[in-house]
Image 1 (tube, rainbow, N blue to C red):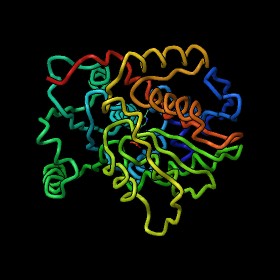
Image 2 (cartoon, rainbow, N blue to C red):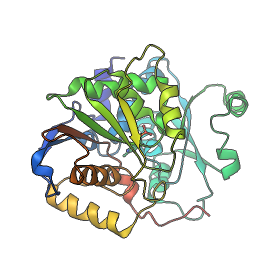
Image 3 (cartoon, protein in one colour):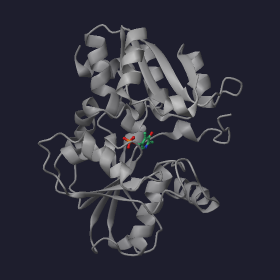
Image 4 (cartoon, protein in one colour):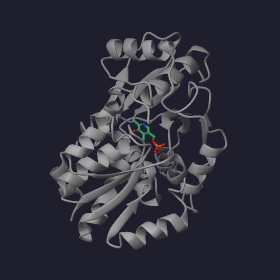
Length: 306
Ligand SMILES: *Cc1c(COP(=O)(O)O)cnc(C)c1O
């Protein structure tokens, strides 16, 4: 199956638009700031999750695999995107979910239920084994026909899909900023070997750990070392937020007419605003923000895993 066919079948809009923005941020008049609108790729197969899953899904369809196992939390954009794609492609997804939400489904998990996903709620200790070879061998044994896709869809197969984002760019940039969760997106952008400096904005507490995740995903022949991860804007951890961040997201969404949320894109835009205010970039720099999508995760974010 050709990739274009798969894109058509799923209703994917690629390439995504590249949009110049004029925010009212301090010092922003001295920079050229654009946004790569991956949030517009698809309403459900959101942003970077499409790029990361593209080749994995193509392989599944080509090899006739009808069962997939993957992992995520109760708000996972990855599980949401994968579940919708699987339902369209008649593939049975089993989602291994961190925490027991069986009596209080999140909006994301409710969508999974509607799309026919089998959900397996596991405790944190079991979930921590999600990349453990023995655990995965056990899953393989109990589900011999299933393909396993890691958390966040971040795997070697995801890298070339993400690198295509860089090939789509119409303009050149000095700095490209992207949020970082499990590292696949940043790793993919790095392998495209663009001249821009890549700056990952950590969406969770993970100094050292995130750099390691990204490095492990890079192919051995990748020579691009022009990247770093900034750890100043995680706001206390994954999905943690402050009132200031939430207010910023609302104001920015209104002013720019681009919806952002506090888990990923809000932290990215907030970081851009702060770095520009303190002139962390040379005057006149061309800066690109990657809007990785994920707006579904913003629904009712107050339900904790029991
Ligand atoms: C998953 C996700 C990320 C993180 O991407 P990684 O490749 O896991 O680093 C960023 N933004 C959004 C909206 C996401 O859903």
